Amino acid sequence: MIMRRPARAPARIGVARPNVLPVQWLIGVLLALAVMAHALTAHAAPAPDSFADLAERLLPAVVNISTTQTLKNPERAPDMPQFPPGSPFEEFFKDFMEKHANPDAAPRRATALGSGFIIDPSGLVVTNNHVIADADEINVILHDEQAFKATIVGRDTKADLALLKINAPNKLPSVSFGNSDEMRVGDWVIAIGNPYGLGGTVTAGIVSARSRDINAGPYDDFIQTDAAINKGNSGGPLFNLKGEVIGINTAIFSQTGGSIGIGFSIPSAMAKPVIADLQKFGRTRRGWLGVRIQSISDEIAENLGLKDQHGALVASVSPGGPAAKAGIKPGDVITSFDGKDVNEMRRLPRMVAETAVNKDVEVVLWRDGKKMTLKATVGELTEEAETEQTKATDKPAPKADAAQTKVSVLGLAVSPLSQALRERFDLSPDTKGVVVTDVTASGAAASKGIRPGDVIVEVSQEPVKTPAELVAKIDGARKGGRKSVLLLVQSEAGLHFVPMRVDEEPGKKESAK
Image 1 (cartoon, rainbow, N blue to C red):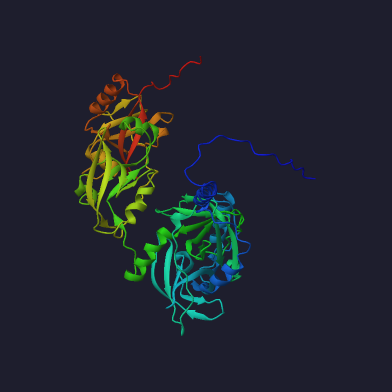
Image 2: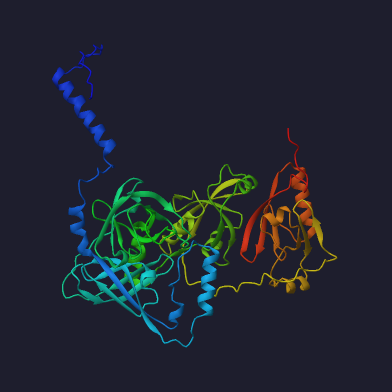
């Protein structure tokens, strides 16, 4: 039983009488409260009683996509049991299937299913690139079961998006993109797609998280949702309650292959310009700055005199690229690009990619303890040059070099660059610095991933040419009371900064107090 308290007379509160009639004053207060209440709830859409009306309106614009592909080695088709990534059973079954595959087996046709949505009545269809990758034939099946062969207008492997075209006799129902940047964690969304071939499936949920990086590509910025997404949903739309596409369903996190309420969608803010480029040029035109960047750790921030870890540290600059022409140098920390703060390193690639080619932008950076602003003209990102061949990692350990110098505090030994060392470690003629010839297994350098053959180019943003200079700069840092130094190291992975502690001798530990 619910108990109710008896009503009490309101307490009298002394207030200054307004210069209006009491009724008018009361109406004004009520209007003010109503405006405040509306402002507080303006962005929070209430949960609908039903999604039926919205689903009925959107379903005709969502399509099923069926692809066929010729498998030359059908025994090698991915039909093995699913295991968690990295599981030893995964490798075991893979090796087993490859050993027992029949290379003379006749090719066979394989069919795959996915989803998509129509963005123009003329028959333009958006889906994921991985849905139609390697397909010999693509068929788009409408909600009313009509099927049409599709051609590829353009595709983008990095964004995992593709634009298709079908020729239908009549205008087709279509949907439009909304603004994913307006979506907040907790907002309602619905997904429509073709899971397991069950076309026209509608699921609902909320935005669970924003800006997820799942290591799917260089521009990861996924919307996470708990709306059920399964195999076959890839390429399908994620709608807001206005019926606008605010995401393209792309991936799920699952150890079983089924939905566990963790799905990922490409935000429309990223997809919309990509699709526009594919429609206009048949490819994506991305902005290019010409820098290689890395994140900032506490030790790096301390060495550079930064108050926090915000920004992107420039490890190297492409010769002749937009950054080089603007005067950006290795060791600079980019904190703002084109008026947008770079709070995390991984945000910068997307900011640059989404910037119009040939646009002049302001780049705010931190250099030598000072903030400065440069102007850069954004270039166009072209296909990368041939991928550098991976160097062998099983080279024999180098013999002791009479000219090597041990740097105990770093746990390594270095030597000046010579022709013999360049040949031993496959170093180019223009490589400068001192080469690491030995690394103590339990030392600081080993823990940071430094290996023999790596080249130390700079110490605390000052170039080093000899082992003596390296030792002198480290000794100078220690005498100056610095806890660490910042090494610029060239390795198989390219140029990158590595912070190294120099305030403790190896093997010494502070006693417990």
